[in-house]
Length: 261
Ligand SMILES: Nc1ncnc2c1ncn2[C@@H]1O[C@H](COP(=O)(O)OP(=O)(O)OP(=O)(O)O)[C@@H](O)[C@H]1O
Image 1 (tube, protein in one colour):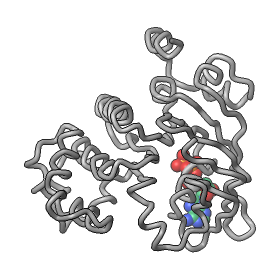
Image 2 (cartoon, rainbow, N blue to C red):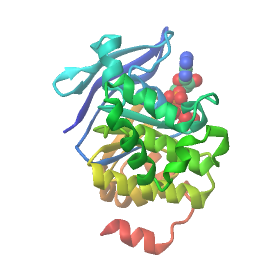
Image 3 (cartoon, rainbow, N blue to C red):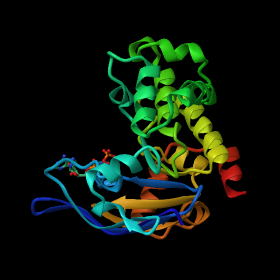
Image 4 (tube, rainbow, N blue to C red):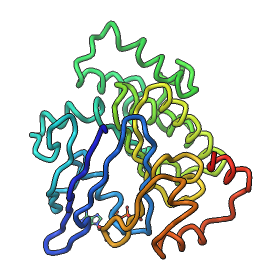
């Protein structure tokens, strides 16, 4: 097990947004978190990396390497982010400022994590190549890349330090379906190569079926059902899970068959 979330609660004043959620993520596994809009998926994922706004409070435990991450001071958390837990977001533009090149962003990131200058250039080249961007992209500014290219660059940035856990929150929602599929296949390939676990937040049941190992379904701040993909897809118990499956666009039989194997 790489991450254990225990009784995690996120509240905004009196309002409970995430309600005593517990789940465990194993090393190298693709863990999908699904559920209707506003059910608390993003708040849960942001609590894990201490990214919640100051008006929100997280309690419970997020256990990583024997420590409760929620109790880490800011400096320790900064060291953990990127190296242990990394994020890619739907708004990948937000990962880049328009004043710095892709290389400068990556340099800054590596510097924060005390990577020696001599190693940085090679690491950046390798990271860009691993997402199918040649080294010349390093010199470009974010606005000089297409949406798909920029999302690739944000994945390269997130995986630069080979984190144990990558949190992908609606990472492909802003892309067309072909680009989304390319990005997710790439993520799968990188996951197999680096052994990182992925907490995958999505609305798209087709992506859940295709890529995940385990699934948790969230509704009104609670996990109402969780288990292996086989179990959730083929023998869902909760009415809401059945509803999610029925509402999903029809899956080609081939995909369903692949997912069964
Ligand atoms: N900064 C914030 N302050 C207060 N409440 C917030 C804040 N951000 C989100 N919320 C509330 O928390 C609840 C859960 O939001 P969250 O973004 O986690 O849902 P979600 O399941 O990720 O939804 P979606 O699938 O649409 O992204 C919502 O009611 C939302 O309005």
